[in-house]
Length: 433
Ligand code: NDP
Image (cartoon, rainbow, N blue to C red; front, top):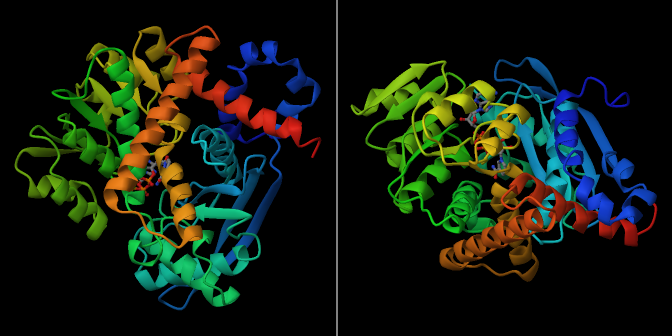
């Protein structure tokens, strides 16, 4: 804690994992002897760099760029880039740390890393975003590669940004190394269903938990936070499975649509126009906009936090419980505070932690890397069925580990311990490095 003082998010993420590992360590004293825990919480490498760029008015701007290469015991570093004003070293480290375990759960042989910048793309022109991305990549180019480190998207980094980043990588290296970034356009090396994968995956995971309990998504109401990549496709899959998604949000507030979210309108407003979420309510008579506030106030049996870290706290958890919530599946990374997780688990709510529930995105990214390496392209059906299979396997592995370590249905314990054993064993076999 002293070494990482001031890194609140990272300490929260590390504590959450370490606190669940006692039963695993009791079975594996060799992990303690080999210093696995001490090594696991220290990134292999951390890069912080200046990103200068010029805005449309000709003014020079300076942002800070990050890439934390956390652990490569299972494969090359893999994890997204986040562009948001709240990005700092603590946030990047928490995300990178989570990524190690998430990636292990996918069984895709990828290590954990994460990066980003405190650049705020909202309100910026395409030309400004392009210049920023080019400057960011000019520095990062020396540190990444299809066999070393493969970035992807996250908050504020979607297909547009990946395109600009890839263009600059290709220009500087003078090589077409398709597998260096994932989340590319489907016309030039991107995998089908990658855009949808994280949101779809979080819903598939919820479906698996419910199926195990003899229940279903069909006929149930869901509250979803966020209105970006993950939220949009969680809503789409909930509706395809016969549920009704009632809400979406952004940093200005949320909308409730009693008839269920109209995806065409949502995609137009948030994806195409990059407008505020209130614009959705302006176009749908069945919807209303609530400024500020929290989607968790809306009664529903299913909850999908898909915006950002610590967005669902104890007070929100109490409201959801009062309204009869049955399952919570984290599309975002660490959106539920530790107190809220405890309340859900204490009340017997099915709770899926992000490192398991949102692993579908990075798993599909790994499939994109395989297709790039083989110079092949899978169709939509094959891509979605692989994603579905992986999410079933992640659920199964998490459930099995929760049983093995004495708390059946505790998916936090299950996901952490299954992933930890995989990574720790690889580290052990590779020696003290
Ligand atoms: P997007 O940028 O597409 O969307 C983010 C959404 O969350 C926006 O609606 C945004 O609102 C809202 N949001 C972000 N920060 C805040 C904040 N501080 N307060 C309130 N609302 C906020 O990002 P993604 O959908 O890709 O990512 C969402 C979450 O899912 C993140 O936690 C990310 O780490 C996680 N994730 C993403 C994966 C992916 O494949 N993209 C993979 C696995 C996890 P606004 O527009 O107003 O900022």
